Every structure is written in structure tokens, then in C-alpha cells.
Image (tube, rainbow, N blue to C red):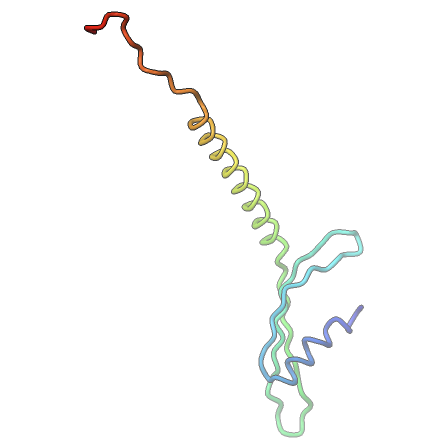
Length: 104
């Protein structure tokens, strides 16, 4: 993989002239996953200079973990609310108590 993973976005930047941003998951040698956002921009070269690209990569692992925890929390809350609504709607509602006396 190495530098080859950088070539496709770099080619897009060079051909389009515009910046490219991508989120990607990397596997560390210890087996953990790292989410990162990379932005690649073409810098205007000085006359006679070669094309230059600027790549900035930001670690998004903490954000991805927080988003996953939020999704899990929302799912638990939704389930709790659905269970509560089901309990209210599903329980037997007692019929009015009628007196055996016709006047009451």
C-alpha cells in the first residue's frame, strides 16, 4: 500500500485543480483502527518550480468513537421509549364499575 494510497487523490487534485478531502480508516500494526481525514490541495508553483501538493491529515478516531456511542445511546433511548409506549397502549384499561342498582 504505502505511498500508492496517496496517488489517486493526488491525481484528482492535479487534474481538477481543486482540493480533495477524504475520510479513511487505517489499520495500525498493533491491530487498532485509526480514522483520519485527509485534505489534499495543489499549491500554486512559482515559475519554473514543480507542482506541489499540501496534504493535511487529522485523526478522527475519538470523533468516530463518540459518534458510535451516541448512536448506541439513541438506540437504547428509542427502545426504552417504544417499550414504555407499548406498555401504556398494551395494558388493559379497566371497564367502568357498574352498580347493580339501576338507579346508580
